[in-house]
Amino acid sequence: MDLFDFADGREGYYGDYGGTFLPEILHSTIEALKAEFRAAKEDPSFWQDFVELMQSYSGRPTPVTHLSNLSQILGGAQIYIKREDLNHTGSHKINNVMGQGLLVKRMGKDRVIAETGAGQHGYATATMAARFGFHSKIYMGALDVARQRPNVFWMENMGSEVIAVTDGQQTLKDAINECLRDWVTNMDTTHYVLGTACGPHPFPEMVSWFQSIIGKEARAQMIETAGGLPDRIFACVGGGSNAIGLFQGFMDDSEVQLVGCEAGGFGPGKGNHAARLAYKDASVGVAQGMKTYFLQNDDGNMLETHSVAAGLDYIGVNPILVHLWEQDRVRFEAVTDQEVTEALKISMRTEGVIPALESAHGFAQAIKEAEKMRPDERILINMSGRGDKDIFTIADALDDSHWKQFIQTKAEQYGAE
Image 1 (cartoon, rainbow, N blue to C red):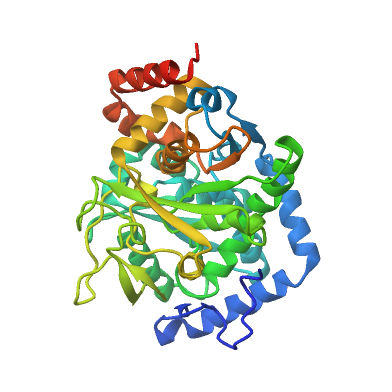
Image 2: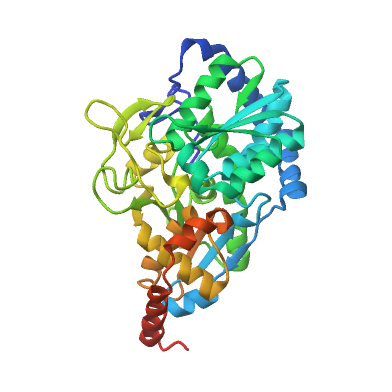
């Protein structure tokens, strides 16, 4: 399946979703970006330069790891993880920003701006700017600045100016709005390094293309490491870049189930979560440059959201994933904060891996489904980031008595030691 074959002439649309909804003043800037991206995508040497950069600078390819202890305890499917946490800066975000950095060089600009929620995209952008010698400014909701202080520290020390956005809910959507305002003012010198596969065309396509390196590697690795393709794939979905990156490697494998895991927060109820599709609280709208599903009221005003994971605390969703959801190619599930905490405890104590709070949503849903599957079936989870950045949030959430009870129950149930 070619996600980017716009045969109907509606470039940038995935079914009814996507598009380019921006002020007229940005028209020439977006057109120039489209042309530069199209030229790069059609140039085989550009992709090769990108792959070589990611290998020498970020340590790709990232491995696939079998979680044998967790698989045994659950007594069901064999669980594997794609180790995007082992990238330089600790997440999949570096894939997209280094690719866009190469584009910025081609365009001859010297300043980059970015929004960030969990801080991983901001951290990666600051890293890229230092590597390529760009001026950089990172916009981050004031609430996220407080709960993601380690990443803010690194951004600032790499030379980026971090702006705490105090408008609105002071989270990711507000940071995106500030980035768009900056871009309008400084478009001649500045490139907006949008961090997820959302926003106006060509960003959903462009970010998805750079992140497809995850899926390309994972498909070959599963065949080599696990002896075959996974039966189900799980990835967290905020904006959706890590999910669409992994899913692209398996899009033509109809037997492989693709599962997007959204932030269920405190559970159903408007304002309690950021599960746009799983809880069916979202509706179609146009905002932040694109047409997609948003958590909004009847007047089109954006609702408040909640998630323990700052990177999933977003009101919209990737228009490509929405299109695939309507085609029944991707299934969406909501994972609550409590389930995420339990999944973190299990992964740390049984396997010694510390997924980011965002990634732990995929772990939690996979754990729920794995024990109902056969031992000869395979699950692949995208460990899109590591949990170092979440140390303070995790410390507040942990309660050892819960995980001990869970492990003991499963051990007794399946006869494990």
